[in-house]
Length: 201
View 1 (cartoon, one colour):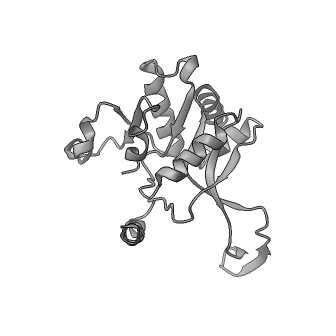
View 2: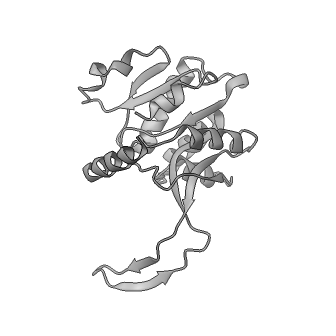
């Protein structure tokens, strides 16, 4: 579980796990009672789930000025079980002095095609300078909370935390991560993740 990469780090005080209201499996997991873990119910989408996690942190007074960095993984709709400790360490080291924070990402290697409504190619998109966002992303608590609240109030669709930060006019730093840091978003991703994990043992 991706939470393990976080709660094992001595400097991380707490990890918020955001679950669905209908979740019936979390409490049965051995990790559920770890003292560093906090649990809250998520929202209808990723941004709402992150907002719920931030609200819990705020309520529990974990957003003090001296510890205002919060490393945020994912909400209820996606997970990153393949995050390595080295990638997490690289991210923390790279963005700890960045005012806008940053995220793990990998440069795109594939040729990109834009399609029309009938799935015919309209054009080829140059991939130079394009990156695939990975998990986790790391931003200062107050900035991320403000970014998400403003995006919500404006009705903006934010597909990741970085896009909310960008909407404030800030520029998150990209930190190169492993390309096999797969997110779990659809059932098929579980099989892919299992194959990748098998190669690491």
